[in-house]
Image (cartoon, rainbow, N blue to C red):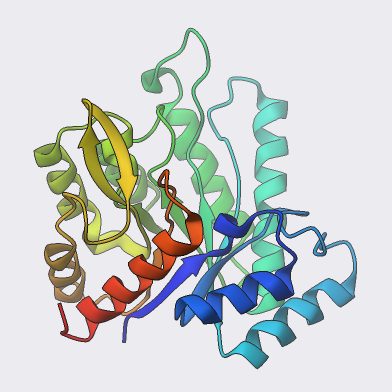
Length: 271
């Protein structure tokens, strides 16, 4: 069954015990636990105790960590820089495996001045192919998020996944990021339909246009057709996490509470 939760990144700077208490208050069933050292200042991942602390706190709260938020930038022209990014992301995968978290969120690559996606496409695809070989013995999958401006393109992301062709590689769909990158609503709908069969993790951001600009709003208030998204995912057999990642101008707590309630209601047939 689909589970509803929040990303812990939204509580960056908050100690993990307090962040998990907030998750419970939001009505979250699961979380994408951010894997960056110090995102929650009491968790650096340098000590074995941090792993035990995170595992125990989540279990006691009844919150399942369905994904670890990892970071990487494979849009690198320099071989040494690319290798460093691969090494860093393998560490995130090892961290997730140690925590028993089945998915690690990844990025494809960030904008580089004077370059376009075409300059890096094959480098990015090759890097993910290398990554799959390096994590073959780890019980984790990698979900590439449509993030940033360089590689936030559904056609490229589908080609990447199909070219690498690994059962350990899929998508983290973020429902707001395609809009944020400037794609028209009809293009976003087409991208999500193309990527739905490969989806293993979902971030929910709802979107409204205010003064001609994209603004994030609580789930259910914007133009993202979330009932259609649910139906599309269920049609592919998706039974993973759908997590709120509220980044709107209003208070994080209020926006997240409203979003989680909406998403749970939609799943449970109350919307």
